[in-house]
Length: 232
Picture 1 (tube, one colour):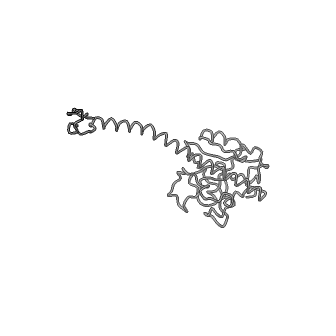
Picture 2 (tube, rainbow, N blue to C red):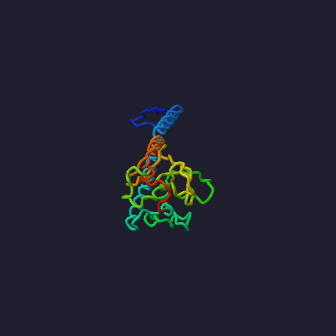
Picture 3 (spheres, rainbow, N blue to C red):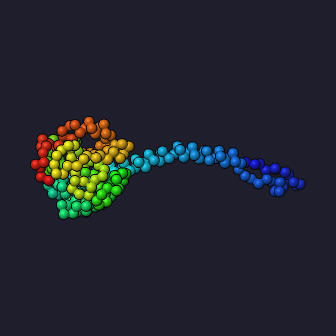
């Protein structure tokens, strides 16, 4: 920055006309720009991580709310919501408000992960949910029917879920049947998927952890029944 010529006039007063115009030099401007760029490079990743953490927390709250709603529904109805009607009623496919859990959550936003990166061009009605219920819960109408509720998945994040019965259920991989669909997990949170277990605690797993956990029979099956004979 250019400095003024401080000339002292008669009587000890500064002569205003002796000042040069104050201005930044090009080098000084470049230094300021470089400093701002360095600060931005340091702050933006931190802000991005904070934003992702907030979204993960919101998704965790969503899946926990579904578990709480299922527990309250069970207290009222004497059983967990039906695997075929927890999301939509049989006559209201694609309408979240028709599902058995909606009166307990009272918000469509609870069904959708805030960082859901599912394909928006997928055919059919617009995507409205990010979570699926374990289809094998048809064998356990309440938590007392589960051998190891802390190890059995209840709700799980998936991607590209269709607005119909198939899109509301998660099957063990390769399980044949009319409701089977490919298990497409939603590893949306730093390459981790959120799961709610039947005892209502939530877990976050990467692919290796999920592949290891799913090998245990009780991960999918709440008890010794492993077919589709349970009441839907």
